[in-house]
Length: 106
Image (cartoon, rainbow, N blue to C red; front, side, top):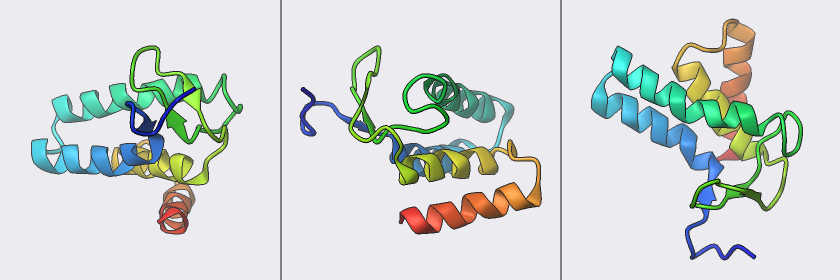
């Protein structure tokens, strides 16, 4: 059983975290590489727990087991927002969708 005050990680915080990280460190190759590395774990997660979705929370300790809701909209929106900030979403429609999802999750 995971307790929220015992190291729980909220996936939705990854979007604002990556945005802040890039603002502090600049949109440099090193900053982008680090951000991509953090996002890569979600790619793997989306193939296992709630196919195509992102869970609400994760254990803080490795192996960061998913917990809570298996398909949390604000978690997906945050990761889409971070991906858009990194230019990973190729179309204007995908970037627009990421922006709308971010506003719905707020």
